[in-house]
Amino acid sequence: MSSSDKNLSDYKKEQMPDAKEMSFGIVTAEWNEEITSALYKGCFDTLVEHGSLEKNIHSVWVPGTFELPVGARMLANAHKVDAVICIGCVIKGETSHNEYINMSVATALQQLGIATGKPFIFGVLTPNDQQQAIDRAGGVHGNKGIEAAVTAIRMVALKKSLAEPDKKIGF
Image 1 (tube, one colour):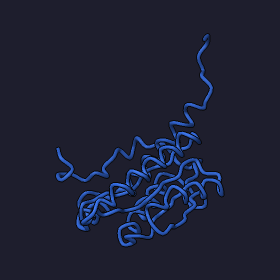
Image 2: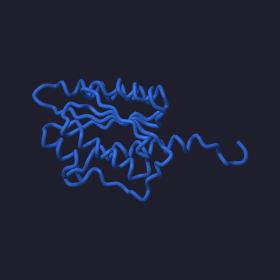
Image 3: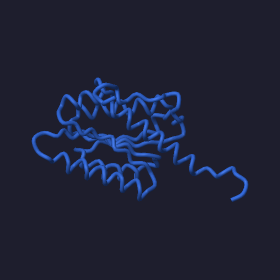
Image 4: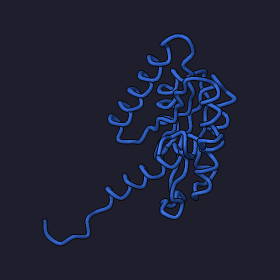
């Protein structure tokens, strides 16, 4: 089934970890604010739906998608968070600027995650046009903000489960 045939934000809610003891940062780009605001709302609401306390969700806005990694690092340094979710939208348009921005942001977030051992989630839409962005920001294909929140919760739960001492006997 292709992405054009389904809601990409469907997931098994009953299998989600409880986020009550988790803290999150959300960094959102102001550029394409109509889209990023919808993504932010989907993300925030999903974190709360799965138990995160609003006081444990720290949000900041940055001028554009390119600034997400630096904003994410600043937020992570300012607050004790378990994961940082980065939300943006770069519409292709008539030039290839989107490829440079998207690849740079993805690489920087990956490097932050590897360097810190903390999940930095890439919640950036990379659509070809405005309609594709709308369709993925609460439209017919769901909301990438929801997907980013689900990923963050699952990654924090994974990290916490790996930090627990083994209950095995022996080596």
